[in-house]
Length: 179
Image (cartoon, rainbow, N blue to C red; front, side, top):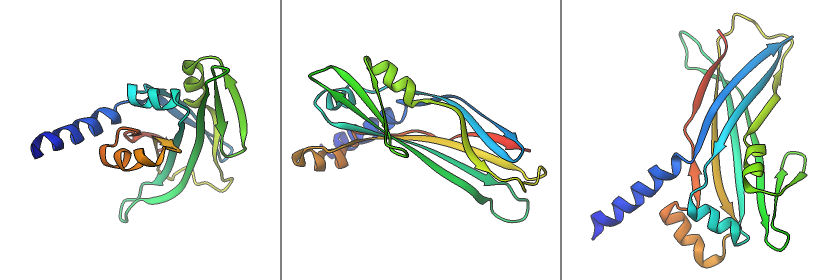
């Protein structure tokens, strides 16, 4: 009985991690300002879709880290940025609302696919602006996306934390910013 429970726990967690994939990410440094472009695909599994359809808010975080690679010391964290989105499904009007938490701007979409595409698109996102950056510095970026459902009903919170059904933690995707 116990091995079967562990098998369910581990298979659910491993399957959930593959729901978010980074299709591509790149960056450009212009006059010390670093701009990031990325395409992230959100493939929500049935449990997340069902929660969203029942009025549960989905929280998406895009985490971007920039590290300075050093030869003799451990890598230094140069910059970390977290882009937060909230996704709601309004059942009566059958629209999806995406809120950019940084500036509280909301956008309305008629389909879930369009809402997820908007959340997964970064175009010339200003990551840092440092006019004094040394072009000999070796900077490496990494990007990861985390999905969570918010405002779960009280009876579901213990189940959600135990089975990891309503969250997804993507893998880190790395790229070179400056070599």
